[in-house]
Image (cartoon, rainbow, N blue to C red; front, side):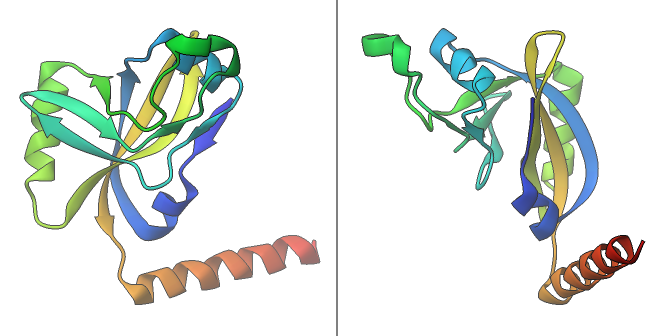
Length: 142
């Protein structure tokens, strides 16, 4: 199971990718295994030397009754201190954002691929659309 943030790939130029673990409660991991996760409009922030992912949507797990989780709570990302320091230095550059790009399982642990991104201008987005349409036409001709 792999979930991509397609909007991030369209809106941003990805400069670097970093893999991070994510701290979840039991009902969240069960819901993710069912495929109920959405990374659209999510982003990464720093709080006190720790990294948090905000606005990741994980649907409520129906069988969890009263012990269910908040769907859009902030979730701690698990990174080494050196990785956090590097990300913080990159984040301080002008126009750089940290965006979750993918969520996937690796050895039964959920991982989040964080992209160090720079926002695209409107003309860059138009160029991406043209390129995608050309590739689609070439595939259809074959």
